[in-house]
Image (cartoon, rainbow, N blue to C red):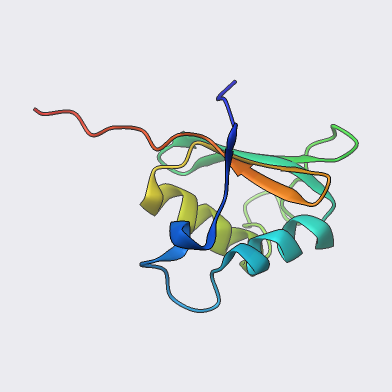
Length: 101
């Protein structure tokens, strides 16, 4: 899986709009008792709860709660592949590089 050894900081939200912030993401992880969110590209995410069980959307064709969807948008826009929450601290993967095509 993607390494998540970089602490998430307020600087990671320099270009984000309200309500996105480090505090907002921490509150989302605490509210849903999440361990990590992994982004695989496109519109594919995996949300793991602290008990290692996946958090599934409420409806088969529906999305996740709006606050989790905001985290998805942030991850996709910033090219963050994984955000992990451990003992009150958020960690993220390194930002993937764009290819020079």
